[in-house]
Length: 248
Image (cartoon, rainbow, N blue to C red; front, top):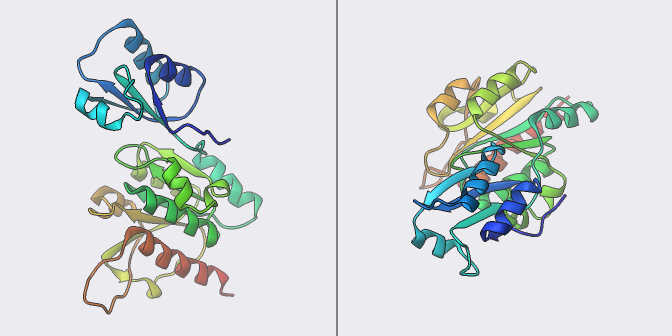
């Protein structure tokens, strides 16, 4: 189900959105403000663990506001609903294919996330898992950048990527992350149930997540610079996974 709203402003509008069960990615509340209406909004928000609450100064709310009538609260709703990790695994089972899942450790640029979702769809991945905190959610910009792939590729949001990796290992998946110091990707066995882990645009894969992975893959480079855009790196590695999965 798609939602047309992306930014919701005003106390009544935000409260009704929460009560209606709309997926709210971020909730910005005026720092130091206390009244019954805001208290009701915060109580509703605590019932939705996927909602990240940030207390900000008035100047920040003014920057975010599109109407100038925010009344001390602005919510960013997801442009699309989220799937669960279990639903992604079920999708692989329905297709009678070994699971192939992207796990994104802190992608912040909506264009990168959209491009990765597009790549995931094109290379046959069964879904994408993103982090709840310090990462972009399913905004309208992400939807546009995915070129429609968001309608076909489920995206799940989790609180802890490392913990999710450990849970998915119990389902038989092996995990490979992208890092310049890893083994050249062509030398790795990327067949079977696989999770492809892509790190943050600047910091890369976090140490704890890297430690949770079974393999670390590097992409050979011959140019004068030593790094790729996160979505491009995801595409290069994803198609190596696809190439190996297509081999007899």
